[in-house]
Image (cartoon, rainbow, N blue to C red; front, side):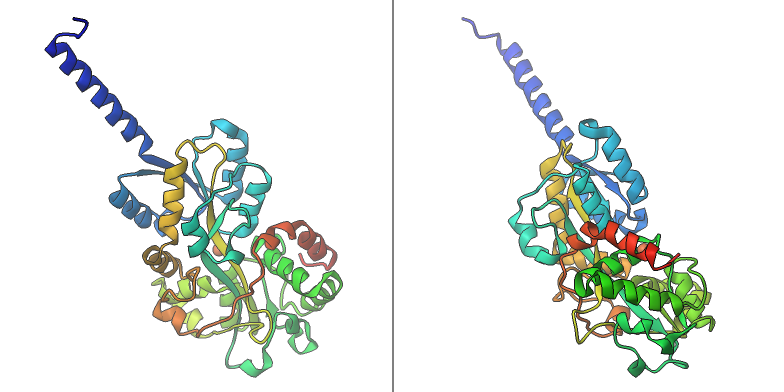
Length: 343
Ligand code: FE
């Protein structure tokens, strides 16, 4: 009696079906703020969309700009996921209160404990190692051992490294503060600064080029820059890269300094589950292999194969310090670098 006529019922059924489809379609997306160059992540995001039907909307910018944007947008931020290229900024994002803790057994299994925040606010997705490159015609590898020994007088006027304003150096110093303490690290920096071949200038690729050009004999750089110069197709960079060799520092001690690129779910996330699914996708073996190879970085687990270029550098031991400390000791590192006169 109270039933609408058949046509009406069909209409309502159709309407509710459409409504459900629409809701599902709206939910099937994830908004990513990424500090990673688009070309270095987009193909993987496309593959994620293809497999899951979840659309990925990508906003690319500098890590600091994206963090500022997240903070000013607050709870109204459209972002579900923040992707950065260093633990320091992930830590800053966590401290700024723009991330939320995620409980994922998949991620806790896939990402080694020292490469993620203890309470699930962010997860490392690739490993970046800071290494020593040297000129093999002027330096014997036997002369090299640790970051610490680069402060020895034998390296006077022979060391190239970029400025203290750079977060990679800040993170390296943070790791040394954790390993060696404040006094020894400050002493080390004074010795290192005294050994500079020139005032800090340029990026990591410029330090490699300076070694190749004979302006200095050793430099401290992230290894993926050397990998990028070897595989990037620029003949001048290839020629420069061919003139240097890579040395893994601190192998008989704590291991080479490592940082991570990584991701965290935003506090404002409206597509929480999709954001978690995307991090899980990026952490799985096949993605790890592609992601690390494309960026010339290392996978988060040593059992995942690396590219022939990276394999040619040999296996290495990375510092097992929790990368959280790179963030929590950043301010202390910056102050100590300043005191040591590292421009
Ligand atoms: Fe970089």
